[in-house]
Length: 481
Image (cartoon, rainbow, N blue to C red; front, side):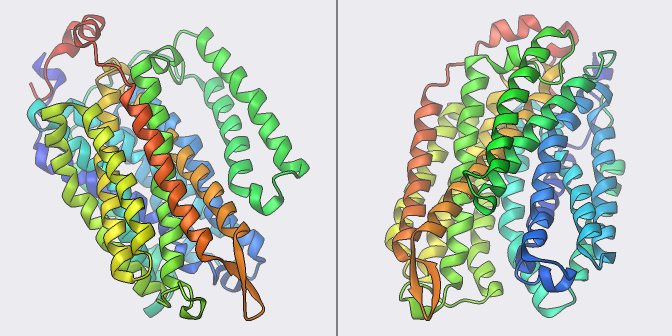
């Protein structure tokens, strides 16, 4: 039994996996400061340039569940190393790109590496002692938010004071460092699903359905919500995803075990994750614009891109600070209590932001509160998932939960974007988002967080004894034995 749980240095493993998650998140926000400049840099239209961002979302959504399942079948450390390869390759391709097509290809390759976080969370269950598991999960899970909060000012500073290609050469170097750290410090744990078949048809079906759904959600505002393209994509998703679900229920080794996913504890956690992702991204869309809007509007604060990023950065730091305390709260009261606490803190932060949006200091304080809640919520959701699924499904179940968060952020971006684009005023011949539009976006974030609290409160208690009976004997040993 001891051989299935090799001795490791848990602190080093957690640090490596948290660094990997933070780097992956930084790569997602890497091009944000360049959005306005991309058409000029790549000699293309503004519409084509948006694919530089959209392609990363689509590829990561397709690859995350696939990588998670392969982690269960082939080994999580092996797949962590595999994820670092497209991260490096994509960064190099982007650094060398001079037109939009290679830039899109490079960003797509970077999206393939986003499965690092769910893989890392699942690996913690195998190598971290039980008494440190909750706090470790909380930190690694929150690393995506930490990277998002810190990545914006870092990339803005580089874009403002150096050549934009430095961003991608730097990300390639970070990916290489991650690969080296994983190779030397992360132990190789035997694959818990070894011998099972990979569901290739299920991977294709899920990928097709997700591309149709997310493409319609993310590009609907640009194409028109009533356009034939958008409606056709929604219709295709409505056909493909149920067909995929029927296939998954028929085969012995599915990509995603929908029977496990349908358990109330897992199902409600995933549903809450959608709303948490929505609530998190609403603030990321509203706050930077408020900071950067011209002071002539009467409500904008006239900050530069770099200054806006620096005002937002303490929010990312708060996630890092709060995450260990979230783990302790989970140990003391359970992950459900931590999740409910987190989403209520998010709602409180949005409520405060409506009153504090008139100053940069107020926005900074509000985003610190919101991100503190996100840190608590993000750390609790993997704990809820892993306490409800057998060890052979850990990586796949965490990857599916990550996918639900991504679906929430995509929906949040679409809904908030529609609100901000529809509630406008005229300013010097231009049409800009009104103050009421920003307030409405913040109130929507507050409402969605409260909905998530209601969903989380309905999550049933874990049936630990029944779960342990369903696990093979070798899997009942505490982590780290």
